[in-house]
Image (cartoon, rainbow, N blue to C red; front, side, top):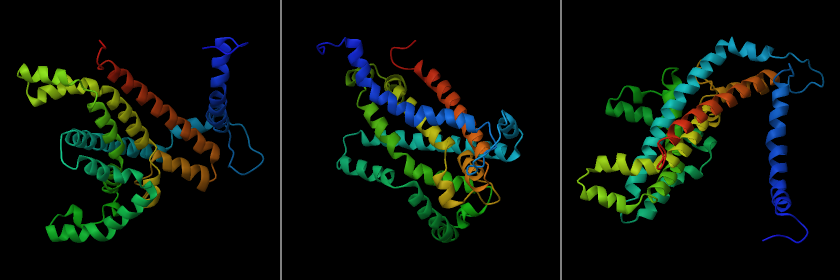
Length: 293
């Protein structure tokens, strides 16, 4: 179908132009402006500032505080991704079975996803402070009898547990959608051939779940590497700066310590880190998809 007086290429261009302009204005332009400011010593408020080139990037490489934040963020991301996707896949397998009240259970498990991160963080903060310690003392569990957020060695696990509780719902829904795309005739053929439930899962189900796993991995890794809300609501980077994530460091340097250019340079590093990790995992998993060699 064509519009009289317009070539098809011109029509397609006009239809996509609004989206392209919005993308350029709200994403590309701020990104390039941010790259420029990352090469300055702007404090975020002054009208004058100096162009310092790559000085901020070099300083970040030598910044021990950034190194600690990077190690915390990577460990936190690893914990969250493993448990969040593992729980999501397990629940998706269970809720894909023919169960009574299956819709109700799906709604219950999805409920945490509709809550804000700040709200969940503040609620769990009170749990760790006043609810879990008495339970731990009553059960004789030493690590549970103290506030996990109050010790540098355990604070990361308290924050990760909060994220896992709230964050498995979206991956679960995506996995459920993927499970519905697995051809039933292949499952039946595998059963006839004598394949066990484990063999059917890894040989038949998993290949069809690779696209969903790729999406969930990208989202989970991005969420872990940019964690900020839980940190603010639960620890504010403490105790003893042990939970300063990269996202929190960007906020601290850019807003509280008046080093906007330096914080923007840290944001560029995080952007590159997310891009590299996502690219590698997409390339690796795409080879495992159905129909790929």
